[in-house]
Image 1 (cartoon, rainbow, N blue to C red):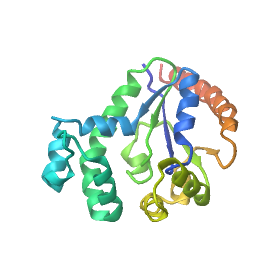
Image 2: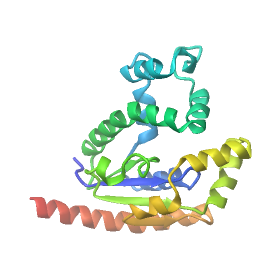
Image 3: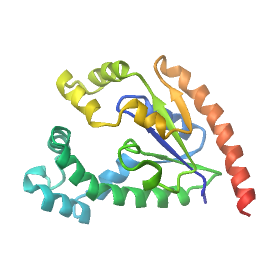
Image 4: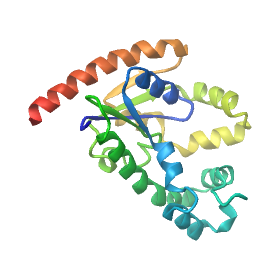
Length: 209
């Protein structure tokens, strides 16, 4: 059981997924908010029914599941639509993440939450012991996003604009990984944090026991 939970966040194309993989390589359980969000709107779920009630059947794909591409374009183009979708998803995602992390083996677990700053930060996630932000300059994010997703620059810029700013993310950070260079620099940074988190988790457990 892991009561010591680290919140991991970062802007789109900041390198957060690579950092997740580094933690997992060290044997740390990572609960992913994106996976929890997909489960929350799976075919036949209450979450999907709420999304259809809010946005209509036009957001469904041919197989009855959510058309994620259409939904993404809609919410990034309209702030009110994004807020409606988040009101449906976020409570379900928070509950799933907390349950997965607390059931995980090891001294601590990581909850990977891309929209942590946008979703209420510490107030929405009071069970996070620390928040780790993966940070990268916006120009670097834009270049990576264009290369990764093969989208046009207008959509890429709208995706960046729809998220919290760097300063807003850094304002909630206890720890920061600056990822503006080579990817192979990340494992060493994560290893240092893993050592620190294991020590902090042990201290917290001793204090609570």
